[in-house]
Image (cartoon, rainbow, N blue to C red; front, side, top):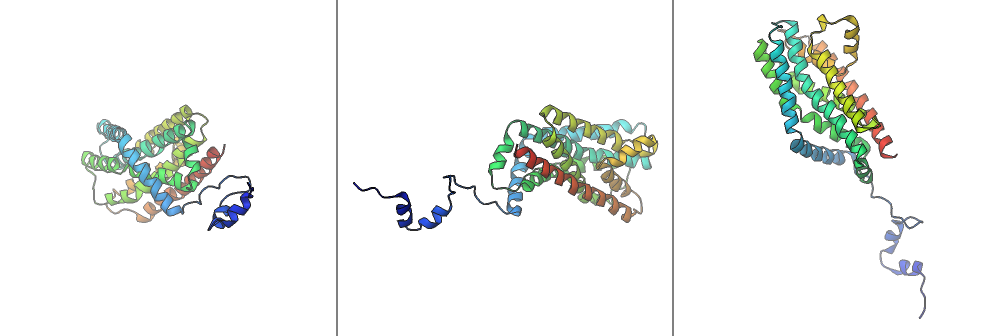
Length: 278
């Protein structure tokens, strides 16, 4: 019986050249090529939106009920004017903070602790697509609760609804800023309990600094309010309740939300790469 070298067999087989090039010299097959960013983002977004729709509907109800309850409680001490606008705007954006910041921080904290990042790391999906897809899904999930809260607040405080279309910009831009922050907190926290704590503290800050009227706060608290990304979404929505809104100021506030969103999502993507390669 003659012995034929494996290389000769590989070279004789039809089409073997392409197959041989797919293997590395140490016998390990390389991973599949990366999927393009657009299709990968769409796939992650749809998967996360489906998961959130099943698992998070009760929590979205809680977030909406919480915001509406806060407005009802404050209705007894706030009549109209700027304080009423702050209460309605802050309560509406609070729904976004509860889901996009608090729940996303918990999700990525649990994903990191449970080894879920290893699953994503083996897929030919760009890290930015994973972070943006999850953040976009959680931010989209806040739309019904935010709209219900804003409309309910306008009814309670007799505010005009003519410019509530501003929510079409406030929700995604505030959601991007807060979702990026929540993802970064969840990925950077060494333990899931700390990720949950950070998410809860961030939501509490959005509650206290966003809902309460800014004019009644101490100056130091006002500085802290300026550092919170959701503040600018609150201000943009609050300005839209004016009879003749200052659209340049509204655009400036939304621009700050957009800039913070890009920065926070970039930090979250870096944190994802860091966590996935450890």
